[in-house]
Image (cartoon, rainbow, N blue to C red; front, side, top):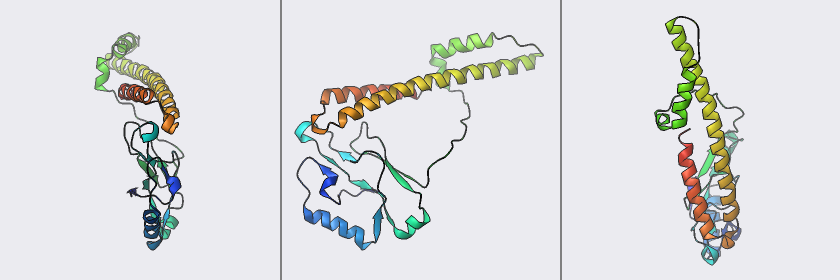
Amino acid sequence: MGDFNAITTHHEKEGGKSKSNTSIQDFNDFINSGNLMDLGYEGEKFTWCNRQFGGNLIRERLHRVLVSRSWREEFPNAYVTHLEDFGSDHRPLLLCEERQIRKNKRRFRFQERWCENEDVVNLIKQAWKHEIEGSSMFRLAGKLKHCRHKLVEWQKNSLSNSLIRIQSIKTRLAAESSKGILADPIDVRILEAELEDELIREEWF
């Protein structure tokens, strides 16, 4: 699993000089000699690009997962996903044993960096004013619980809005990048910068 710096067909390369038939055949011979099979992939076709534009753009599928027949029998549901390559010339591979059906419930944890967020500070101030009847310890526990619920609600809304913005930028960036040699380099760089800023903000949630 990884970057083999080789392709199995001419269709796995776009732009630049064509790979020699000899190099392609040598890589296929290597795969066949080990009785290996390519797991294929989900996602974008190419896993590497030189991050150039116009006629200088080169894209190739250099990364792959090769397994033995016995491994495939042991893990029949395994699959490979080509992840995003924003900000890099290599696209990471994710190998999963099987598809996840359900996710574990995420435990709430207060983030210290939230203390620098004015919205969080004001939210806690307002939540702490919530009146609760009972002993001092009971009121304290109740106020803490109320603050936690309000923070969870804020976190979900903030994260949701952030993820919507991130997905929007990714969609626009993917659409522009998919144009290949026709992609506008200025638009791509601007979108990459916007995505980086939004990902940094997302870490706060």
